[in-house]
Amino acid sequence: MMLSRFAKMAAGALLLSVSSGVAADTSQQPFNWSNANLTALSGEPLPPELFEGKAVLVVNTASRCGFTPQYAGLQELFERYQDQGLVVLGVPANDFGGQEPGSNEEIAGFCERRFSISFPMTEKATVIGANAHPIFAWASRVTGGKAQPQWNFYKFLIDRDGQLDSWFTSLSKPQSPKITQRIEAALAR
Image (cartoon, rainbow, N blue to C red; front, side):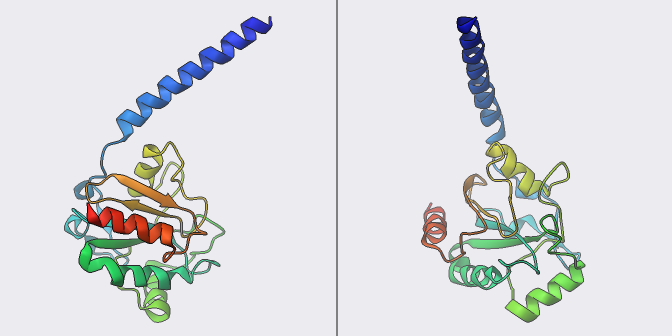
């Protein structure tokens, strides 16, 4: 009986490793900006040319969160690295704690008044679950769910080739060395 139970566990572990390998291989496709169909807070399309060939730091944002002051750091990163090819992309979402209840117009006004945000922001979206924004759904698939946001201001970096470089929790401030070092490495490639 003990051997049988061990054999079942070993077979399950082998199946899991094979399944994981297959899923990882098929999901490692680069993100295709031209198929993203991104819409700005203003309702205008965000053209793929804004992102293609750039390193993109994607962040799910919220206006009424304890992490909301990170907007200032994100703007600072954008200003510091945009000439080298970094784009910060904010994606407002109301998925965590109902902390982004406003309309697209209200979010845009808040970001402009409070933080003078000049980096692109998409219209309000869902970033988790079956209806997740395409960028967040892709990042979650690529990492087997590890890059799925757990709260507001979760960040992930897409390199110039459209590959997921790294991801950071809400606790990682935009100017933290671990984020700036990954950005610099992605921009150097």
